[in-house]
Image (cartoon, rainbow, N blue to C red):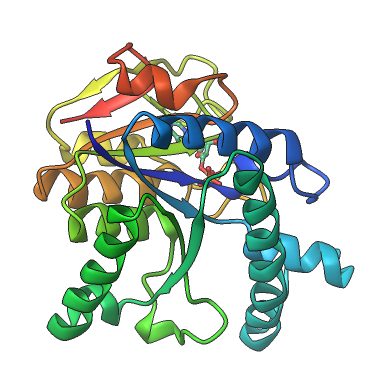
Length: 253
Ligand code: ADP
């Protein structure tokens, strides 16, 4: 795999306290910079802006109104990029912020434009760090979650591989938080209704889509010819291992 999209969820980027997990972000930046040094084209889709903004604004509970949520996202996006810029910069890796909305994937002109911009960044060895443009996007124009966004991005740029990093090893036969008998499914060749039924909601208050949006993302990815893997962001060297072909997490092909 040469061109790889990596999506990291809030559950991977933050501690239970809501504060950013700096060690995790630092390791991710190091691993992705090293892959870029080996000639891989890397695109990072990162959540965490709302959480970072809430923390900075001293908000204890999730914002209730949309303007408040968007305000938190606007504060948090800057914080997030500042940290990525700093950590990737430590390894000499250039990053770029790219904020997208639904129109960028459905409107033909905008689609071509987003694709061209991302390609220009990749051709210069830059790692684009993508998020939905939460501060301005209104509901009807939203993609809604970064799992779907990452699959759209993978499709737009014809990625070879999409890796979704979460707080869990992969897809289980049921939500392991509620079912202790749940077992890891290591390969899904066909996303049947039975597979979709296995997927529950988010595991933590910080998480958003849960397994449901990840399976929906897998549909988009696979339909666009992109292999997708769901794996744990807590596992050391997880991206490198997946690229090497080790059996990690759940693979959709
Ligand atoms: P992220 O922030 O990484 O997107 P989420 O909390 O949104 O994380 O999604 C991951 C969570 O989905 C898991 O921690 C788990 O609690 C929940 N989940 C629901 N159904 C399943 C399932 N069938 N297999 C694995 N996890 C599941």
